[in-house]
Amino acid sequence: MRFGGRRLPGYGVIVGWPEEPDVLLTGPRGRRLCWELVAEMARPAQARIGPAWGQTGVDSLDVGRAELAVELVAAAGQRDWPAALAGMGEAALVRALADSVAWAMYWQAPDGVDRALAYPGMTESLRPVARAVTGAPAVNWWSSGIEPGTQQYVEAAAGRHGVGPVLSGAADQIAAWQAAEADDEHAAAGRPDDPAASYSGHWWSAPAGSRLVSTTRALPGLGALQLTAMEDWPGWEKVKCWPVTPRRVPRTYEIAGPDDWVALVGRYPLDVSKSRRHDWWRVTGWAGTWLMPDYAAVSADYDAIHLSVGGYLTTAGNALPVGDARCLLAGWDPDETYWLADILTPAGPPARWTWEGWPNLCWRLEPA
Image 1: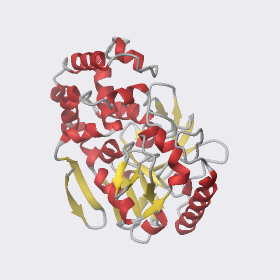
Image 2 (image 1 turned 30 degrees about the vertical axis):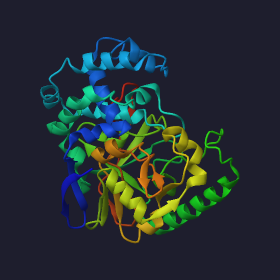
Image 3 (image 1 turned 180 degrees about the horizontal axis):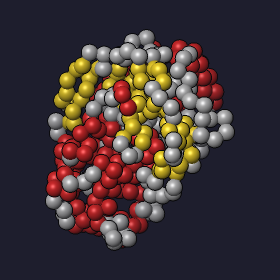
């Protein structure tokens, strides 16, 4: 699996879309993105592509694969996808991305649609959609690296939150994260070896519990991408988005596809088999050794780790081999950057946003 791109000093690999756009269909989030686009175009029919797919939406797979495939072929075949997506604005494509992100779950089995899309040959009719996505002008930035001038930190505005990012102490936070992961792995040693046992725990492989600052770029009229495309959304109603920028060019590790994630885990491995075994088996069916990056070790070589949208769509949710073990990208939002060093500085006052309900993108910018 090869990704074409170029290297910029200090910013790591800035990668284009995969040389073969069909790779977008090898990951559950990329498949779901393409399916969501087909479902959106198939409206106003309320069955979401067809009655068989409507049953998968309530998490039932009692319908036959052939029936699902026929409905998907019929729905996907109704459009000239390059033309349709070439004329689609950024907001509409971000909405489809957000719908895919919303169904990412790493503490239970995938939902019915994701499971149906994983059937062999099921996504053949989505290939024109995948190719059109990678060529759509509105998503050129989905394959880009960090955009330093638009980074925003998103935080709930209520309670103890809303005070802004802590832009110092990254080394201490990483050390605390490392100790907490070791404690968690030790505490999980008493859980049953049977991966199907009813146990759950930490399910993310991003440094989400570290209190490290993470950011996404801000989009005109939409605000920070993380407002819309966030895994396991916490149900915020009011948030503050704080603009920040690096004081210098960061040493950035770019995750632009599965190979980059596997290489990061392979270079800085941390065994988390005991603490993740049960959750990640439910997601992937893998019962062997699980690895994730040791972010304390990564921080010796890099200031930041950035996951491009393209990297997210092709990598998240797949059990990827690292030697005889596996790794899983989980709990990391598209275009999210985790900052491992104290190099950020404020870049202006925060903006306040209020959630106005479903569907996604229903955020309203409050007056300054």
